[in-house]
Image 1 (cartoon, helix red, strand yellow):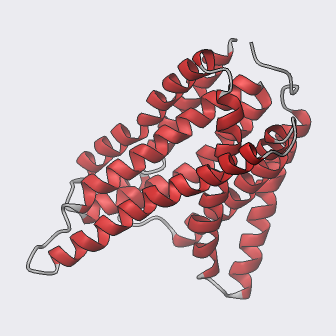
Image 2 (tube, rainbow, N blue to C red):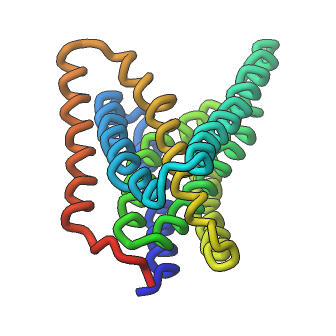
Image 3 (cartoon, rainbow, N blue to C red):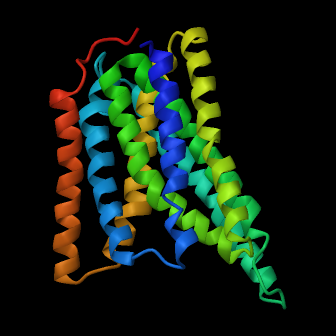
Length: 258
């Protein structure tokens, strides 16, 4: 299969898994908090392993330059800005809805926009990763799947809180998820048009993933401090690390994709 085929199949799987992850909320009102935290913990292990075992070694394979450092920081800061934009509108709309509105209906559009931008970036990362080699593409895809499922469940919850019906929330969640496909298509075009696109997107992805782990996932785990919970989270993080170690050791060889 060609690099483009791998990338498109992967992003379709990511989009479907992200939507399927929200389906339990269609069947009942809540997903087990313990299950979500276990998934979050696996995500931490998967994401950090992808950064330190795949993205960073690839990014610095030609030397650790100022450009590489700036691209990592750019990846970190872009997601910071996207989340600031979403949170600013959330607080603004919540303040407005305190004055007599039953639902924070205006939360939904801004949440969908933020999620759409995030998913578009994921698509760019998938395209750029497969352009480097198949193994990097696979580890990037696994990382995105693991952080997308808890994220989509949370986003689905926001849409329900905003007054959407379950079917409408699932439909709009799906529309937001498929922006990843658009991102992959754009990424595949940029790979052919811009000679240094992969040199930008891989360190950028490393910064992205570090932000997700450090800002979104780990703080959530730190809110649950019981010894039993902490040990379970540590076990799940180790499982996440193990998944990527297996892909790195036994996945397709680190050669350039076709």
